[in-house]
Length: 453
Image (tube, rainbow, N blue to C red; front, side, top):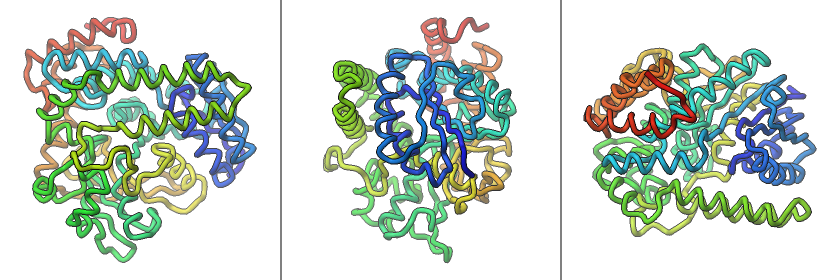
């Protein structure tokens, strides 16, 4: 179990220090000897990698290394986490503006914004996956690069069968129920189905098989303390499930578009400003004052978290409070839990993005789904879900069609297939709108995606 090497692709990103601190805290449990941070942005890697290394030293003697050489990062790796943003914050801002100009939502993982991001993300992640297959073929790849489900589908379609999509949102219900009952999350068995940022939780059962979720969903106090507060009681009753917060963009499509369009600065612009401020302050502080750098980073993280999906918040919600069951480690906790189980720790029950393998009636076995799994030294296996309510199944099938077509479009660099993908998406549908969106994205992002036919 010891001597494991963990590589973070995108290690100069703003979430890198959170991940490294969490991994260092669990280094002994995971048998971690080295955490290697890879990024193509040398300055960000220097600034945020320095924060990461300082945080790690407080928890273990795990060796933290920063590099701009992908071969150095991936050679000998046991686990790799990918979290990259091709085109940076500027591309995200452009994606949002183009979508809004055409009268549709610009959110970066949903609909047009998700397609534009995938056009840039998929080729990059496939490149790293191919290098990983050459250098460390037995390594597990945990993908957090958005749109996570679509990117994972592309990885699996390309034959990378040890690639798994991870997302903390997929596990919020399990953790909220655990917090409400004062038990460990792994003592519970969630029944999660859907796609990344488009999933529902049918039940969260204890070891005796009793569903603990349904009574809590009927409790207004529980709903107000979780992200279920985004959805009114009538909708909750109609659905009968815990609803992933990103489904706000579907169930309140016109309201989401109006709210995001009315903001003086979009989410992308706000994040870009916060990131620039953080990097500027870290550069000013310099390496001689690591404690000040850490304090600056902590303040940044708290501020960023407090504005998450603020336009979806009911007016009665307390601003900036952490929701019930939400941990401080985010996606890092999901990845680290998987690593622990795969390396001999207790079996883990959670939800990740993997092929449904016939466990979900409404999807093909090769379709990557956000689904309940059990994880142990034998691997990651989806658990039986079977049939799901038709309203959820219909939306899931429609968005999965979009994902399939999007992966095909990116693989073949086909404008026509990309138009078909957006025509299949429930937030677009219109051919004229889909074609105009695709043309705008292809023109704007040519430097990152090259020429399409």
